[in-house]
Structures are given as C-alpha cells and as structure tokens.
Amino acid sequence: MISARAVSKRFGSGPNAVLALDDVSVDIYQNEFFTMLGPSGCGKTTLLRLIGGFEQASSGEIALEGKALNNLPPFKRPINTVFQSYALFPHLTVRENVTFGLEMQNMPKRDANCRADEMLELVRLAEFGDRQPSQLSGGQQQRIALARALAPAPKVLLLDEPLSALDLKLRKEMQIELKRLQTETGITFIFVTHDQEEALAMSDRIAVMKSGKILQIGTPRDIYETPTHRFVADFIGDSNFLQGDIHQNGNDANNTILALPGGQTISLAGVAENPSRSAQQTSATIAIRPERIILAPQGSSETALRGTIDDVVYFGTDTTYHIRLDDQTRLLTRVQNRDGATMPFARGDDVDVTLPAAAIRVLVD
Ligand SMILES: Nc1ncnc2c1ncn2[C@@H]1O[C@H](COP(=O)(O)OP(=O)(O)OP(=O)(O)O)[C@@H](O)[C@H]1O
Image 1 (cartoon, helix red, strand yellow):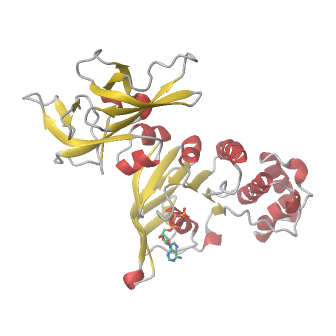
Image 2 (cartoon, protein in one colour; image 1 turned 60 degrees about the vertical axis):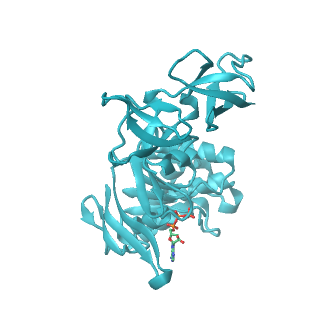
Image 3 (tube, helix red, strand yellow; image 1 turned 90 degrees about the vertical axis):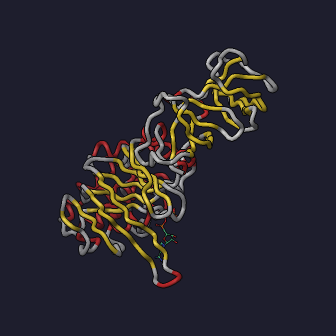
C-alpha cells in the first residue's frame, strides 16, 4: 500500500541542520495495522508527515500502490490523519463534524448525513450526533475524530499518538477499539507511538526507530522474542544484557561460547544467528528476557552459572529475583506465581542460573 525507498529528511542547513530521517525504507501492506515506535525525536512523526504530504522528503521516494506521491498535496492523497489533539470544530454538532469533510468533497448533504450516521455507529456513538463536542468525554471526542477521518473511506489512516491525551484505563479501551475499527474497515492504519505496550497490543507489525533510522521491522512477537539490536531489546520489555568474547571451544564449530569478563562461560550452541550482525565480530552482547532464565538450587547443574539471590520482589502475578553472579554481574529473573503462596527462593540463597539457548539473542550494539 505504502512504500518508502531510501527516504531522508533534513531540517535546516549548515551546522544546525537536523537529519530527522536517515535513508529509511519500508513497505506497509494493505489492511495492515502498522506501528512506528521509538523514543521522542527518533523521526516517527516526520515519516508520518511525509506519507501524509505535510512535509517533502529531502531525498528518496514514497509511493502509494506503486505510484509516487512526492508531488501530490495532502488533500489529493487518499490518506487521512488523526492527531493527538482531536481538533474537532467546537461550534458544530458531532454529526456536522463528521459530515464537514464529506461536504467539502461535494457529497450531497443527505448522503453525507447517512454516511456520518454509519460512522457514528461504527465508533458506537450513534446517539450522540446532535451534541456539541464540549458535551463529550475525551475518549468520546477521540472517537468522533476517528469517525470523521474514516468517513471519506481513505485508503490509509495516519494516527499520530492519538491516545496519549487519555487516561490509562481509557487508553486501554481505545486500543481495543482502534484495532476493531481497523479490522472492520480494512483500512491500512499507520500508527505512531512511543509506548511499547500500546504497540505490542495493537499492531500487525512494528518498526522500531532510533535517531532517524528503522532498526527492526517485525510482528510484536518477532520484536519481543528476537530483537536484533541492543536498543530494541532494551526499549521493548525488560532484558538482561551480558557482554563478553565469543570463542570456539575446542575443534567443535557448534560449541561456541561467550566468555564473560569474570571467567564464567555461556554456551552459545544452538543460539540463532542474528542476520543484522557481522559474523567477524569477536566480542558480543547477548540478551535474555527475565522470564526465560531458569533458576535451580545450587549444585543441580554442571553447566549453569553460579549466583546468589540478592533481592526478591513479590508482584502478585509474579516474583522477580535479583541475582548476583559469582563475577558480580547482575541479572533480573521473573517467575510466575502459579501456585500462589510458595516462593521457591529467598534472599541469600545460592542458585544455579541457566540461560537456555533458545532464549539467548546475540545483538548488534
Ligand atoms: N520543522 C522542524 N524543524 C526543525 N527540526 C525538526 C522539525 N520537525 C522535526 N524536527 C526534528 O527532527 C527530529 C525528529 O522529529 P520527529 O518529530 O519526527 O520525532 P518523533 O519521533 O515524532 O518525536 P516525538 O515523539 O517527540 O513527537 C527531532 O530532532 C526534531 O527536533
């Protein structure tokens, strides 16, 4: 539906120039909920604004269904935008807010009213058509903004942090609502957020951005389970990072190990290759999620790392154990409290710490 090829965007010139997008390429498919996720200033809004036509790329090309968009002004693109501020017209009724754009496109008033009522039904506010926006809650106003943006049946809907003004409970409800709207309408949604949970909950695919570049594109599961870069593993969920040198143990090519600075080793046999990483690099950072680390009483495994429980924090659904390895490296582990009151380990216990090969990721720093 949308493809960006080698797109760069520079703001200003000379020493004060900002490279907001640096050689970005991405394909976004029809009927997809696609999210651009990254910290403030990483360039996600700039990419959205280029797709919407509110900014021009410094170089590269953006195409919609294979046709270059570069010189098409925003109002001629079959693309609509929902902003964080709902930007409803306060002096118009809810229905008039939705019909406004349709009438601007010369749709007869009766048809526009019909379409508006369909859209109000879609966002479950059918009975609110005659109210003023000021008589609605924040969440309801956001839904009207969505109804208005969906009314002309755009091919693509751009959403720039549309939920960030809502409180947490409402935001969670609207996440489900947005996903439902996208599935029911079949419109391609391109969503911008810095909230990783929001991205994981709603998206078909996520592009993780940093400093004007896309580091990784994948399904929420890909991004969480197989992050390619340290930044991605750190930005999404909790991760433990261990740095060391990669060696081959003996003559067996399958027996690769990571030697930690303190002398302990971790077997990398069976650990998946990272396609973004150069095989020539001899030092590496590996990541493992806290819930994938296996703890056992000390002495139960010959190959495990040795550590001590420094701290135990009970969270209701799970318990986190802060581990200090013998070489002083610290690890966070998380165990689900499946059987209620039993806590397998206490502060001060010595433990064997196993990092299963299937859960280890070798990262690009
Ligand atoms: N009109 C502009 N003029 C100059 N610099 C700009 C302009 N718009 C954006 N930038 C800069 O480009 C970079 C990327 O900005 P952008 O708004 O795309 O980031 P973002 O990831 O959307 O951040 P946020 O989550 O804070 O909105 C930032 O360094 C920003 O300061």
